[in-house]
Structure formats: structure tokens, C-alpha cells
Length: 125
Image 1 (cartoon, one colour):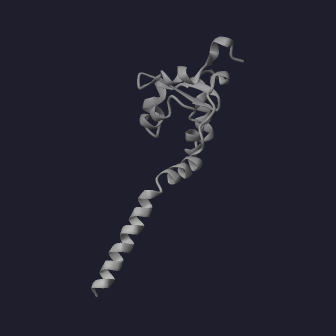
Image 2 (cartoon, helix red, strand yellow):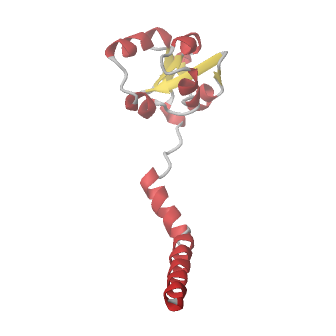
Image 3 (cartoon, helix red, strand yellow):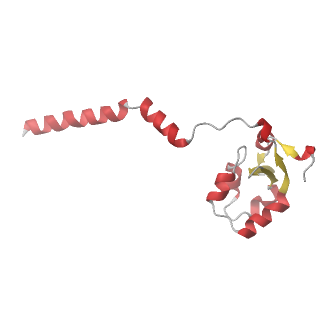
């Protein structure tokens, strides 16, 4: 069981996002994967893109094997301090709906221009 000194915030992890010093957070656990970056089959860019946030969804979406999950344990350095987490933002579907409501004029203008051009084209014939 980790001691109190083995707890890290997401801000702590986000400060370790270079190829020389890289931490990731998966399932509430913090991993120092600096030594693994060159060996990662997906390349180091994939891991570096997942720093500074909870990378659990990215990890799960990649479909890692049981052996990959076992390999992670040697890079484990501590637990995520959940008391400092900021509530998650709206999910992407809610964000999409908000953008559509906000920018409805662009598709409406395209439809309007298409109708006018079509009307003028048919009128010439």
C-alpha cells in the first residue's frame, strides 16, 4: 500500500511530459514511463500526448494485452490524489450540440446561397 508521499496530483504528473521525464496516469495510478518510451510499440508520441491528463480512456481504447498491463507495474510510482481533481467538463456530445447551436448561421447561409444559385440557374433556362 502506498504511503502518503506516494500520492501525486494530476498537476504533478503534467509537469513530467518530456521524453527525458515522462509520467502518465491510468486508472488512478501514476507511472514513470520515461525508460519505456523508446520501447513502446506505438511510439513515444502516443505516450507523450497522454501526459498531463487521465490517460485511462486512451489506454483502454488501444486494447492493451495482459502482458502490457503486467509490464506497467514495474513503472508504477504512486496513486493519483483524487481530492484535488477538478470536475470533468461536459462530454463531447454536449460540446458538439453547443457548437451547433452557436454556429447555426454557417450551414444556414450555405443552404440559402445554394437555393438562390439554383433558382437563378433554373430561371436562365
